[in-house]
Length: 369
Image 1: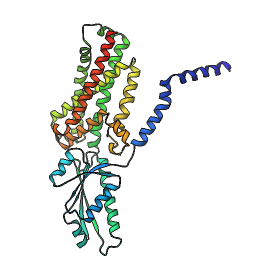
Image 2: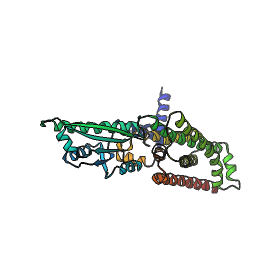
Image 3: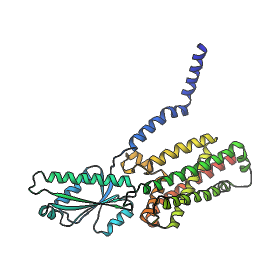
């Protein structure tokens, strides 16, 4: 029994001395609990909306104040003309526009009926449904407050309109998100495991000793995967369009270019992971841990970024799938061009250059060693 207790004590000391094991045992559960607790929410918060007030009376101002003070919405823009409504949606900054009809107060006092139109960006069907529901509830609460002492009951007629996805098809949301997740995971895993396998078998040392330069070695590894992954991306787009009915309103050439850029970024991340790992199991673990959960939770794929705490929103800005999903929705559903998605494109391009530069640098260090 003493031998057994001594063996248990030795194993316990071994675990305590290994900070990496302690990090997995205690750090990961805390981090996952915090991330899941704050990210997984059925509520919406701080959603950017625009107001098109054609009446600008005491009633419409009261409704607007109630919307903004609710905590669910944040006033981003005041619309001055109908043309600005589509521009606001195409910019990607506004998720909902509330339109008050002309002479809102007069119609409410004379006839007891006034109209409010709610236009929502339904490229994310779940969020659009919640936004319209929350806005309608606030409108009805205002109506109930007015009717307490009013001789003539006032009625607000809500007219919702779903932009870019009138039928609220869930495919419009999950096809771009699934495409971003598949390309990121497959490209990263293929590249990282392929290079680490050569390190384990010793063939990487032969390549490093050859006349090839580090960027040529990396390029030779990446080019075949870029071609195969682009074929994979085309097949996913084909399935999304012809099986799930997701349209491509924008330029197909621009869409393929953005896919190529995102694939290059995913492969560069895979190469970077291969430079910091020494086994295929570790490369697989890092790829799944670093990419899978963040891609699902912190990219806006399922849960809106605006509803997350500020610190998680900053983390979301570091997630490449967030920008790629935005690009896919803008090109496929909204029909926008490079003038709208240029910022997201530059971010992806900058990340690609950064990871390739770090990977080449690490290969050069290994070559000198």
